[in-house]
Length: 79
Image (cartoon, rainbow, N blue to C red; front, side, top):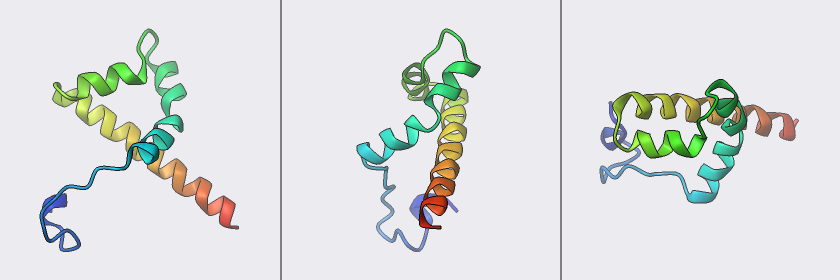
């Protein structure tokens, strides 16, 4: 099921994270990405992801990791 087919999204619109949310998530993985990919920045990856499927998948994986880290951080803060 794609996001546009999800029952919680009846209009079929794909919701993108707000800029502040996206920036917060990116901050959780930016340094690790740049350490793993010397000579590249996270901004480079984001720019390439608009055109290259491989980079789009890589960005998606890093943002998934960022979401996981944010969830852990939020769980710790609530405890």
